[in-house]
Length: 65
Image (cartoon, rainbow, N blue to C red; front, side):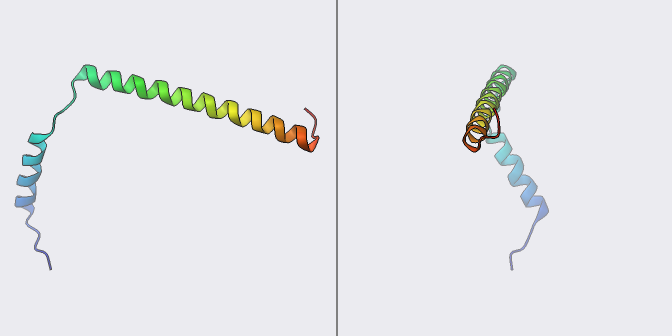
């Protein structure tokens, strides 16, 4: 069985957190904007692809387009 030492764990976490390179506010903002743009692009693409496929299926099945 592994012994759990809470204080040792906290010390190790603090030590590891000091090694982290945190992004600047500008980098975070730029990355966030890039993510939103890519999400909008993906959502638009998937919406249009879905609409096209629905059109094709309705046309093939003759459900009136």
